[in-house]
Length: 317
Image 1 (spheres, helix red, strand yellow):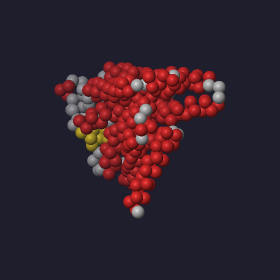
Image 2 (image 1 turned 45 degrees about the vertical axis):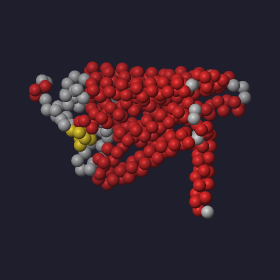
Image 3 (image 1 turned 90 degrees about the vertical axis):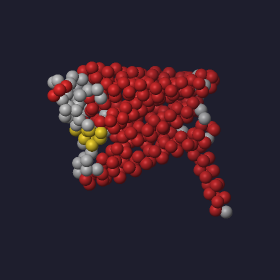
Image 4 (image 1 turned 135 degrees about the vertical axis):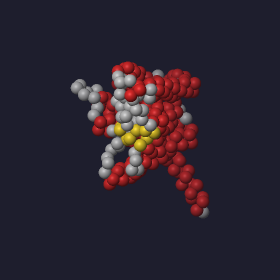
């Protein structure tokens, strides 16, 4: 089809999760509450780390980055989805769609690289504890964090530019909750094989490579833990990476179960559930996991609450 016969759309229509008004209102209340918990929980983690000097370590430096990524990722998708629950017209301008794709794709890539960086941090803590402070110095931590942010952003910029150069013709209905990469590519009325190759390559670089690094790190960690003779020593060593391992299982688990299937690609419903999982559930659970499974964080919470209680008592008296 020649470009002269193509009609370029100015906005897309997001079909979302349901067209039933009652269901949409219920979903609005549910996801609005979840979003508030997500933002509050992650910002409290960041505040706690900044306030407590005992948490000024590489592990919590990377956790601060992860919490910020979670908040930003949720914010790129959830507010727009909430607005569409209550709106009669569920359109999103092409420019806004491109911006949403850029930020969600970039932040997703940043999170996967960050998890690999955090796995390396746990590897050094367990396998080289005496040299931990020497290896994981401030300069290296900063460079690793910057690498995470830059790699995810550069990949996202490339994918967004390539995707939105495609002619979308008159296809403007997106059966999804947001402007996802594969969903937008499917709207093109030209051959998208080169885009699919680019997506596959970026998936290998930013998804499978970090995942392999995480696996390699934990193979070394588990091997080291098994060599520890005392039961107490093994428990202490495993405890240092339990929270991170739980988060890794959440982030990578659904993607692997969904995409590594022998005969088919994810259905539309599966794609929507994946987006909801990464935009709502994971960002909400991450601060809870690190709070409930980590002695240092729980101790910091108790200290902060004690200080707040002391201040309130002085105000009352």
